[in-house]
Structures are given as C-alpha cells and as structure tokens.
Image (cartoon, rainbow, N blue to C red; front, top):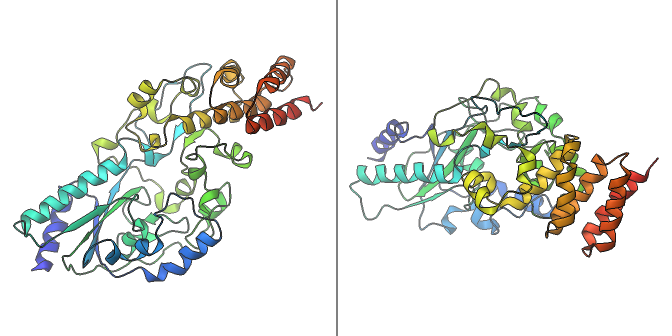
Length: 382
C-alpha cells in the first residue's frame, strides 16, 4: 500500500511545486552526535541552532512514533534577469542569493502544506496518520536529512549539493508515521576538490563538511552587535549572507533556475542602493525588504553592514551620510560602525579628524569611544 502511495507522491511532487523529493527512515542521526558536541566545545556554533542536542538527532523525541521523513528541495535562482540600474555617484550592496524573493521559510511551508494535503486526500484523511513539517528553524538538521533521503550529498562547504541544481536549493522535511520505503543516501562527490575551502575569506570551512559558524561571513552579517573588525573588510559590499563557497563550486557551474514565481524579485531590491538604507524608515524597510529572508533580524544589522559596505567601496560621497549616523543615530552599533568607516574614508581630511574629536568628547558608550579612538589613530598617521 505505502509503496504505491510513495510513487503517487513522487509523481505529484512536481505539480505541487517541489523540484526534488526523497524519503528516509526516522532512525536517529546518531553518527552526528560526537561531531555536534565537538563543534559546540570548540565554540564553532552560532546560537541560531536548535538548543537541545538530542532533539536535533532523534525524531522520536519530537514526534510520536515516527516511521519516515520526507525531504524536499526547491531550486532557487543564482542570477537576476536584469541588472540594477547604475546611478552616477551611488553604490549598491547585495543580498545573498538565498534571500532573493519571498522568504524561503514561507515558500517551503506552503509546499509542505500542499504535500500533506495531497497525502491526506490520497489516504482518505485517515485519522491515525500524522505529520510534522519543518524548515531550518526546526529541530532536525536539514542537510543531514536530505543527504540520507538521497536528494544529494553534503559538500565540503557543509551544503547539500544536488545533481540537478547544485547547492542552490532550499530544504525542508516532514516527519510522519507512515512507513515509507527509504531511498539510498548519496555519497560525496567532492573528491580532491578544495575550491570552496580556498575561496572562503575567513577560513571558516574546516574541510570535513563542517565549519566554524562564527567565522562564516553569512553569520557575521546577521549579528546585531558590532561586527568584529577582522570581518568588516571581508564582507565587501554584501549586506546579508555570503555566496562565495557556492559561486566557486564546480557543481554550481551554469546553474540558474527560475522555477518559482515567489523567488522572482527586482534587482533594485536584491542589490539596493546603500546610502538610502542608512535613513530608511521602519515602514519603508518593511514595505521594501520585509518579504526577504534577509530582513528577519530587522534593519539595524543591514544598516550597519551598509555603512561597512560604503567604506569597503571607498565611497567618499557617503561621508556626509556617515557623519550624520555618528552624530545623530541613537544606536551605539550604528555610531561605532560609522566611526570605523570614517577612519577609512576620511584619510587626508582634517575636518573629519576635528569632527571625530568633538564626538569623542560627547560620546558616552564605551564601545563607540573605542571605535572613535581607533579611527582617529588611523587618520593621524602621517
């Protein structure tokens, strides 16, 4: 009975808006336990992970009598159709590809809801059949489930790599008490390739499919405090996420899949003008960027990153905007980042030195005071 149902699901998956589907058992992911413990002990975790280790490994702890897990993948675009307009004197930032279009959590929840409806209809809404869908905010480790369900293999960058779409895929899974036959797991095809390891600007990738999450630039762009100075130049003009390890991956060569309307968005949004971000209102931010997964932390991290990006782009035309941030913004993170940026953009400008000295006399936040002093030291070097 369930073999036939599985085939029906596979056949229907495309029409439900699912690009790839696989099935695995609900057995614990015991083989990952020591690795996860080691990652935490080494301070390589970010705090975004589900906090209960055993629940990340054992579906039986989060679902009553699980029998199977259905894993799905949706391919997303890697290039926008039209480039954002070039405007003289204006620099643009960039959201990482996984944040383009409607928040992928919402897209995956929609597809999983449709899949569950299909299974319920196919089983005449049997009262004893149950489901638990989840995306990356759930307990299980998406890439581990997808690999074991045969969707692809885990690359040296820790991402799932599929044969059809490379690593440009969103992943979700559904635990169920239906005993579906499991698919065959995929083994790594990375071989001796180390392109992602060599390209990572912070050496966050450990070479064994794991990473030091706190060194990953994607994580650094999502924090809310001051970004450590060592990472600031390395984000370049990206204000959310990081695509470097995907862009250099041979399995992603030529990949650009436009299958889902919700993932299409204007390049003016994916590559926003940086200076306007510094003063954007909450209402305008929500209207323009609220749909993106990259907006989940609010506007402050993106504004901080936009200041860093302007400094990295050596955009001296933004100096007046950044001066206003330091003088007027009530948030210490923005003021401190602005001081750092002025230390880069203000070389040879005595008026900026005087301005920073005036702000130093007025500043009360210790972190901002430190940033102003560092900026002054840089500018006073002859």
